[in-house]
Image 1 (cartoon, one colour):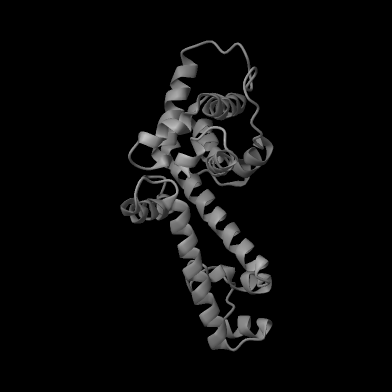
Image 2: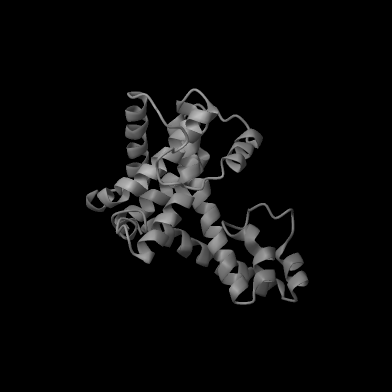
Length: 235
């Protein structure tokens, strides 16, 4: 996906770049909120970074990089912030640049309702990256089920996507099966298939942003570590 996004002009490149931007802009904005003095400056920085990313094809330079796109992007953003601090900004909010549509109102509302985490900017970036990736994977899974006429099955079983001990409100497989007209065993088997497909989609999504298959498992470990990290830095 990263290689495709660096292709500049083709429809596939544009689609890949849009997908990457949708997945990573909020984690970068969360990082910026911890690094700059005001909400407005954080919005300006994030908007301008993605505008410059398109204009100068930063993603294209990732083609020769080894490692994870997540790490490449945060390094590029840190460099951008450092560069912006060193010069006076004549134009605000992407003035004179390519316009990028980012929903800052929704992002700020999300930040307001999330409890203060005490995480560093880097830890917050990694956590929001993990959440965004899991949400994206769940959305893809839902689309697959709905397109195959199994939307009801997905809605009843999605709480089991990451294991039998998910937040399912105390509902048992027998309860779920009764709602769906399935036996308890059939409901349990359907949940197992859903979990397997969820893992497949997650691995597929991660494989699009690393340089080799050997890094997928490492990145999955990093993902769950980012979700588990405490404000003290302990996991």
